[in-house]
Image (cartoon, rainbow, N blue to C red):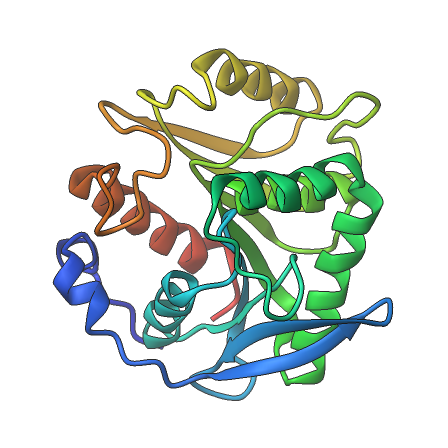
Length: 249
């Protein structure tokens, strides 16, 4: 499998990202009797897999483009839907409503993540050789997945929520954790970053936590005012190397 050693030099440029073709497919599936719409793409049968979890906008073109970037690197990707078919909030109040519901119901969040993995496996995804990654809300969901004891090899977050809910810990975590965070993030503070580092160290979970100076919350969202090319390029390059080192290729 070939990896783009200089991937970081192109992914930080919004034009390059926007030009990635969508070769995958929208996938309808159900979890606990409710309808969801994910996105699946795969370059080859048996390819190592990435479960991708969206931010508080729901599953949009952004996640699909990131999925195709990973497919070009040789990974199959299932971009999960944690909100429900057709639910792609655009107003802040709606975004808070849908994320808040799942923050309050962690069992439902876990069941949706498990359901996404089950659908990915049904589609041919190599769930035995997989990593989960997420953006913002999706990053918080990925850490929830890690705490649940899900049998993945790794869990990576980009500017994701870092707080651990009361009564939870990382004692069941099976894979390593990679956290990429902007030190100018006012939504998720450096105190939360430090608390997580201490918690992972105390529970002896293998981890790496990186901060990027001047990067605010959502620094990877190209085309937005918060986008920071330097942090996006560096974090994606680190994630690329993490996948290569963590998964069997």
